[in-house]
Length: 456
View 1 (cartoon, rainbow, N blue to C red):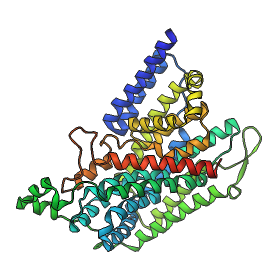
View 2 (view 1 turned 45 degrees about the vertical axis):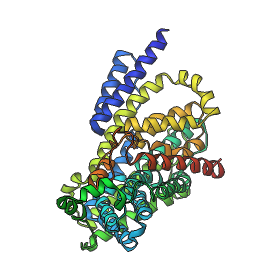
View 3 (view 1 turned 45 degrees about the horizontal axis):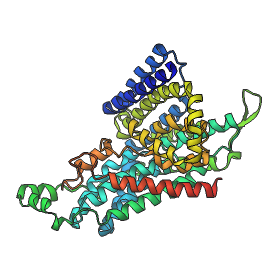
View 4 (view 1 turned 135 degrees about the vertical axis):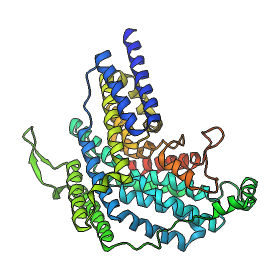
């Protein structure tokens, strides 16, 4: 009885820390998780878990490279090509815009590259009298869904590292980043396409929307809504910006090749005296550091400005969030693993989709796909969830659209001058909820099918 009470009290503590921390943002989440950790260790005398040091170092290396790329102008170069495609077929913006934001995230490893695209998408939609909510909401969702399809995203690196550690401990097959991407890329893309197709007819056309027509009846409002268009097409980029893009792509290709062909990686004697290949965590860290350095020199980047870039700020916030959340949850779950294994093994084995729902909900609590995986994936693997099933459910790690509090969603709302992309009266009925649910559901269904077809 006392043990049950202690378990419930500790679980409530963890959930309260996550809920309060989420309202304070990523760094606040990491700090408040530290409070929970101290109470668990000093108050309940739980053995402290191990913080995910290798994952954090890998994230830092990727973020350092990507933020240097942004300061070099490489991200703007990529987005200018995306804009050129959208403006060449403006009547297809609802289908093409989410594909562009998804692809940009796949290339760069972070959904925060989407901010520059929002005003462009809104401008194109208004010019063609298309309800901006249609392409904008699904584009915001697609940008975050692209994270699970990127070889250099925090979430993909985290999943690969967790599966590698699990394989080393249990002898189960180790799945590389390439094998994960073989499943997650088509699964995520299918989810984006179906969500975009649904968005084609969502809401009323602007000429039939009485609320919108009332707005533009005011000349000042009409000038505000239809004015202020944004474009990157008039900008001239220096050659060094293009060089930075080529270098970054070369780095991503190197990571993919070394992941696909382990024989290319050097081998070393492990602490157990066995010959082991260089881990992909270390490969990614080394490659990203080298590519970042090359971009710095060849593109003559002002490194003093790198910490001010959006990618650097978002990435370092993610590191701190993962640090606190992972350490606290590892401490809690590590102490109660036997109880959880006994109680949940049969559930996971008979209804593995229940884990996908849990992952989805935890993602909303921590506002991070990587943090959700770090907190829950080891538990799922320990209680009998197969690595193949976990890869199939990778898309379920994106659940933070459920409440419209994520920075990219809020930015999307603010960039839509028409006001059609919005938070509903009841908060939950916002513009992102249905595209997000469609995208995640389709991603999990396709991912599960492909994972069992290809990897099992």
